[in-house]
Image 1 (cartoon, rainbow, N blue to C red):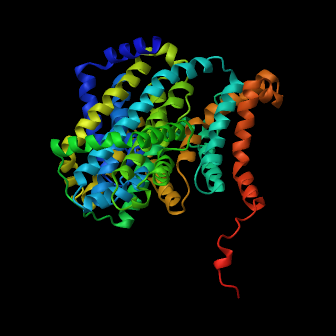
Image 2: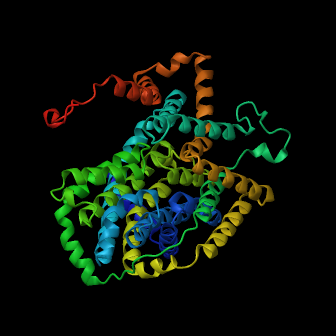
Image 3: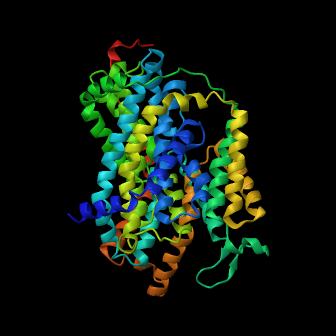
Length: 509
């Protein structure tokens, strides 16, 4: 099959000493980021993105994607040993992982978490290998109306499927659109919203925004909360690993179901966090030991970790095939592709085969390397959590500032980063989501260009958005998702309340 020969070519591209070294460095940095509560994959990739400016695009994406895999692995360590989720998607892992650690089974819980993460990612990568080229081939037939319809579907998916208030999602997205509009109009060449400030001619750089919003914002929040760590120590030896591996085949159905949930939530913009909770809930409902969940069940660790890793990995499919990120981290990686001069989307599979298949091959090797690294270095990374946060926080702020300065060698970018950090902190305090803002900032101008091109072709006739079955279906689905929160609320009101059970047993006043 073409995909297998292309994948083998991808392995030949990445199997160089430099790339393998970058892979190990990326995994190690990623685990470190995942271990530190509050940083997270998107923040880590955003902060370390400037390190890759001097690399070739293939080496750069290998390092960044390995940082992401490492962060996905690392989040489980703090969840199980310290009951502090390193990542939002690791919250469900604490339900059974921490009780297992308290019962002296920390090694088994960690082995199950890492192995399940690996299996979830592996299934998602296999799906990407065979599905992404087909999606890209299909997308090659797209014109401006189809592309705008897909962008619209992405924006509306965040409203319809996102958690939290849809009005907050729309407000966050609106600010992102406003920021994306600053700078030079790509169609007319006129300046927009620069208010006479020359530095704003180039617009708000995506990288400055994500470093501030994610990195500085999280640090400010963590400083306010005054994180202090205390937890169980863990040692993983080959005996514990093999004994745990013997038990895992018993939960094959849980793993498969969780991987499917994760893949679906990754491709749609559901994300890894809802996928992990959904898989944990399904496992609890369907397991014979469901009543014991929360007391230290191995299955309660397997389900959320498999789903989270599958979701995190499959979120890269729409980014590669359509140029649309399925998660905040994928949005940061997409920004990286643009910085390196690559245009994500269907043409990437035609024009940059080495890059695409090198990245897909690195997903296989990166996850194998990640599994080996975390199984052998857990005590080391757990000991990092005993360093006071007052020492770690300034180091991260300095790294962020250096990263922001190196984008354009301008001090204004550092001030903008701090401003975005303050905005990120306020957003988190007010429970406004950051992902829609980042998505609108990255894709806002592209969606605008596609819309204006479609309007030029149709001479201003909006009916071009329903001119053929494909674009009409995508546009219709997008509008349905946009109003879905209102529909679901109306359905909930119309639906009759459940009849009270055991009415006869209830006392009558």
